[in-house]
Image (tube, rainbow, N blue to C red; front, side, top):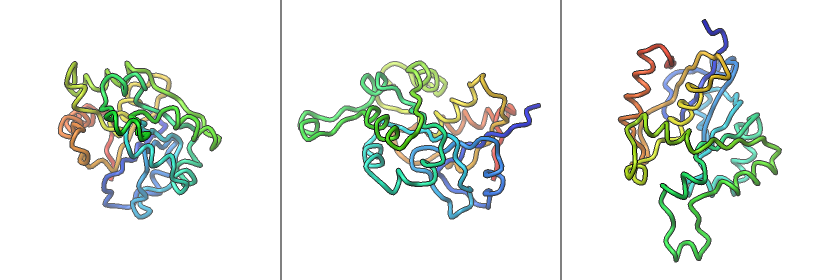
Length: 204
């Protein structure tokens, strides 16, 4: 039986105060711009998983309030879950006019530089990581260009398939709703299957 606890904190609603439980966990994972949940999800952050394939990524990387936030300053590691090769091959690209005005689909290298200047250790996950997560949700071939696993799901997938640690994995704050191109129903079903199998525990 695993004695160490890893908690992945989503950005969806949390209905009860989990701050003590989260801050006392051995390892805490948050993603993108973590929500404070009015203080009910604590503040500990060991790993921040960051998606570099969205307009929000560029905005976050230019936002000093975000870069100086506790989630960023406390994180021991920033993980980029979507490899530039995946972004180039499958994710929407700006049209030629937008490109001429400086819009880019991939913020990975800016993120490496920006977080590096903040003294953060960064890690880029390989393309096969993303493809295997998408495949588990039934996303294959051409559908990879229209449907994209959420950062929260990729965070869960990452640690559930990490053989280098023996944590008990718990999750909270996952509402399974938001951007229309994320496969929320499939993600919720897959995670619920892992909960039923005892591989993940939902708290809160």
